[in-house]
Structures are given as C-alpha cells and as structure tokens.
Length: 476
Image 1: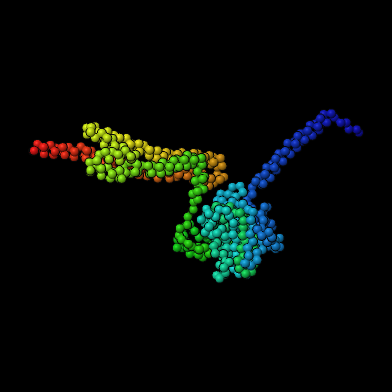
Image 2: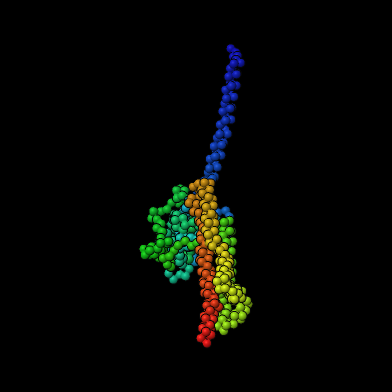
C-alpha cells in the first residue's frame, strides 16, 4: 500500500521548522549576552590581589636583580616560595597599591601571608611607601609586621614594627587589617626581612578588599591569632607598655597628624591668587609707611630743638630759616606761623593748625588701604571655601559612596585653606593698621604741642614784655 504525502502535512512541518529556527536564533544571542555579562562582572570584580603565591606581580621586580624564589613552599602542593638568607633582606619594588578604609577599584585593605623562620626568632615583612610623612600610625610601626623579639645584642634587629605573632618557627599564617594597623598609605614595595642567623621563607601573600575575600587563600590559624594593635595615637601608660612589648620605641606621648602646610596652601586653588596679591600689597604698604610716617616725617626732634634754641634768643628769622630747610609736617606749619608772625594771633594759629591737620590726614589716608585689605582678605577666603564646598559636594554627587569619606574630607580640607589664608592675612594687617594709626596720631599730638608753644612765645610772652615796657616808661 502506497502512502501519499499530503500538502497540508508538509505545510505544518515547514511551520514547525520555522518556529524552532526562530526560537534558536532568539535564545543564542540571549545566552551569549548573559555569558558576556557574567564574564565582564567576573573581570571587573577583583577582590584579591596576589603579591606572591607562584610568581611576583606583573611590573614588579627584585631590587638586586636576582630572584629570591625557590622550589617548595607552605603546602605540599606549593611550587615555590620566597627564600631569604640569614642577616639579609629581599626587596620587591615596582608596585603601586593603595590601602584604604573603603577600597575602590585597584585598592585593598586586608592581607594574608605565611612565613617561617628556621633558627633564631625574629622575622619581618616591611611595606615601602611614599606616604611616610603623613601617617602617624604607619610611622610608629615603620609599616612593618614582625614576629619574635630578636636577639638583643644584634645591631640588625628590627627595632620598630608591629609584632603580630610571638614566633614564626614552622609555617605560620597571619591575616591582618592593614588599614587598621597602618592607616591610609600606598604600597610601592615589600621587604622580606631576616635579620638573624639561619634563613626565612615567605609564601601565599594576598591582598583583599574584604576579609571574606580570602575564601581560597590560607585561613588564619586560631592558635596563631594576631595580637591587638597598641594605641599609638593616644599612648597612655598601658598603651606605652604595649608599644614597648611590640618593639616600638616610645619617644613621647605626643603623636599626631603632621600637616604639610606648604602643600596645603598650594592646594588651595585659584582663590589663593588674589589672597597672595593682597598679602604682597599689605606688606609693601606697611613697610613704606613705617619708613615715611615716623617722627622724621612729621615732628623731628632735631627741628624742635633748633627752633626752640632760636626762639630763646629771639632770633625769629633763624627759626624761620630752619623750618624752611625741613620738609616735615611740623616744619611747614611753623614756617607759616613764623613768616606771618606780625599778623593777628587767631588767624595765624588757626591757619598753621589747618596746615598740620591736612598733612596728618594725608598720612592717615595712605595707611587706609591696609584697613581695606584686612576686611577684604577674610571675605575672599570665605568665598574660596564656599566654592570649594560646592566642588566637594559635586564630587560626592558624582562618586556617591565609592570614594568613602576621604573624598569629602579631602575636598573640604582644601576648601578651608582659603579661609585660613584670609585670616592669616587679616590678623597682621589689622595689627599693622592700628599700629601705624597710633604712631601717626602720637606724632600729631607732638605737632599740636609744639605749635602751641611757639604761639605762646610769639604772642603771649611778647605781649607781657610790651606791657612791662609800657609800665616802666609810665613810671619814668
């Protein structure tokens, strides 16, 4: 019996094939996209960084040019480890790894490593950094982890360091919170220290953003739990004993953050430029006025002595000549007074006083810019701070929580520099203004006193002599 192929059946078969083909085309790109997203996420997330397990990081190198890597290691499956001979150290450089409280991309916080000391007691792991001058905790421990007290008579013994375990005889695993131990810093190199007899080994060194990222790395052994960190920033009596037991010399109870003021001022931004200009102008005016608003410019003592000597002898012409050869405020007023002594007392003394007052006002007007600078500098500083705060909160809006508190605190610190600079300029300029003003007014009082004395000699004493002469003539 022959089977006949129905056209309607063929159509149904073609439709089913089309649907299956369409579904396969739709599923393949979706699965490919999901795979790409998974790979990208895995590539982006790098919770651990290998300082050394089987090899050193790309770009790093041994400072002496020879490798310190040998066969063997911490576990039976280990291929190699870092070997350091007695009284030596190996130095790995070429690194740039930030240690931060809230690690971002390329930044880490925790470390785990294993080390062993064959003979002797002391072993050390020191991190080289370019941030030595800005971190009190890091400086206190020299960015170094140590184990063992060391031989007291050994000059190469590690004097400064954070003792994390009592011994390293046999492979010992250590996991530490580096930010809590040393604060913010950037690792530029690592030194593997073996200051005493016999040799040492280091292996399985990993950095991580979180302690939970050490899932496949060596776990800290409960029997070798790390010691607590001494309080190096507030070392009381108990903390000092902890520091000494940790091998850290206690110099004084004053441990604090050191601020590089030169760098801070340079970081103040463009608003520092007008503040610099105001400071220069204030210094120039102050120095100029100190020179030209003293006694020599207003009421020189030599002039007063010469005029008084001439008046005692009644030589008014010589007194007038002395004043004519002097350029001070008192000389100009006395010259007018002596030149017009034949006129009435009220008119002459009033005009001479006006000449002196006008000259004093000129001296005061020349120091007035210092007063303006003392008021303007804090306002410019405050403006710079407001601009800096706007930029700081702009960074927070841009990065959110990725940068942690360090972004906001650093930006605010730089912004406040302008206010500090404005106040630094304002305080001495206010003092300079009132010092110069008081100096000028003191000389003005001397001018007033000397003018009164000369008026008295010219008019009052002369009137007494005339009255006496007239009385003698009448008696005769």
